[in-house]
Image 1 (cartoon, rainbow, N blue to C red):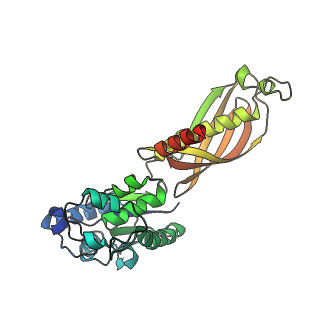
Image 2 (cartoon, helix red, strand yellow):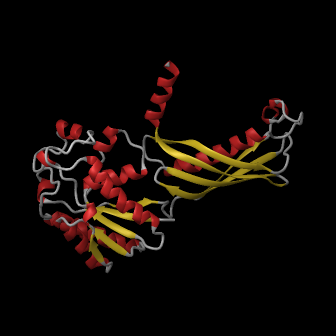
Image 3 (cartoon, rainbow, N blue to C red):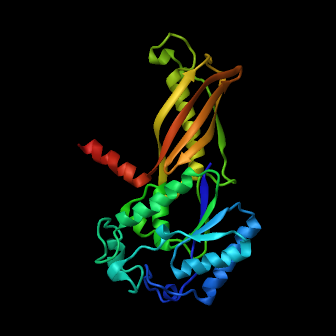
Length: 309
C-alpha cells in the first residue's frame, strides 16, 4: 500500500525570530543544520525504504534535503510544486500566530493581497500527492514547509477551517503519511454470543432462533470500527459508508460468533475492510465495508442541526 515520508526543513533565522517566512528566503541556523543531520541519522537507523527525496526549491528546504541525502545516500531532486505558500502581505511579519494571520488562513479564496490563495496551493500540492499515492512501486521523502504540511494533512484528514489554520509540525520531525505504518495492526477480531434479541425471529424473519443478517452486519461494522480507531487523529471518528455481505450459514442462539476485519486499502479519509464471520462450526458470513474518517464535533453538530429542522 502506498505511503511516503514528510520532513519540514530545519530551523531558520526567521523561525528563531518568530517571523513568517512564506516564499521569502531565510537560511538555516546551526540548530537547523543539526536538526537536519539528526533526521538523516534517524532515517538511516530506522532502515526506512525511501527511493528518492523531493524537496522544495527554497534554500532552507534544499539544504535540509542535502544534509539528509548526504547521510542516507538517498538521491534528491527539486519539486517546485511543494514550495511554501506565498503569504503576500504577511511575509516577514511577526508573530506567526497573530490573530489576523490565523484568520486569513481560513479564507480559502483570498490571495493575502498579492500572495497565493489556499485553493491555488491545494491544487499544486494535491496534484503531487495524487501522483505519489498512485505509484506503489516507489517511496518518497518530501522535504518542504509547515504551510505545505497543512495541505498534506488536509489531504488525508477531515479538518475544520480553524484546525487547518493551526496545524503545526516541528522542524525536521519525520512523519510517515498515507497507508498504515508497519507498527499499526491490519487485522482485528470481535466475538459476540448470539442471544434471543439478535435472532431473525425478533425481526419477523423466518421464525427461526438464529442470528439475523442485520445483527451479523452490526458485528462486522463494530469489528471494523475498532480497527479503524487505530488510525485516527485527535478529534476524529469514522462513519460507515458502504457495506456488502453474504450470510452463508445459520448460527443458533447460545453459539459464539466472531468477525475478523482486515484493512485492505486506505485512500485519503476512506478505509476499506474485508471481513469474515465464523461461528463455532465454521464460516458463516463474509463481506466488505467502507468507513470514512470525519471530524467528531462537525458530525455531532450536523446531526444536532438536522434534528432541529
